[in-house]
Length: 163
Image (cartoon, rainbow, N blue to C red):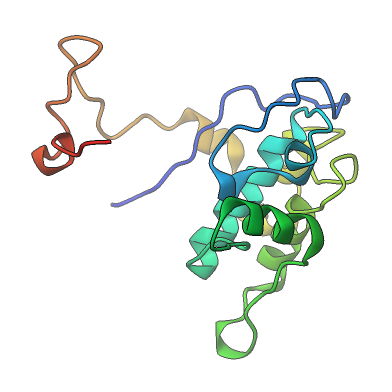
């Protein structure tokens, strides 16, 4: 059975949405939350934003915002609303609602911001998922590394890529 599992450590309550006062802009542009772009400081809600981008990308096939330059992209993240496919390609209502709430521009109102992962776990999108069973699952494959920089499990064509 093929299975993709996303694991994030530290799904904890995020009461302080501006826990980190660092105003430096860093990260992969497509996943950066509005409060980081606006250099307002940030907290755990930036991770919920990134999860929304990832879910959108998984389900739609592209990121919700894109531009020719990082500046163009950031402008769209700040000022535009996410467009969702319609017709035959429309997302299930639960999926769209989850993504919409994760991509809330106001970090205080973003799903998960105040109560943490519990808010997501009770969302209708996950109604058929038993989190306790999921957390008890063992990995089907665990690589046996010989040292910290062991790349023997990577395809060699990816090891020769130059920056």
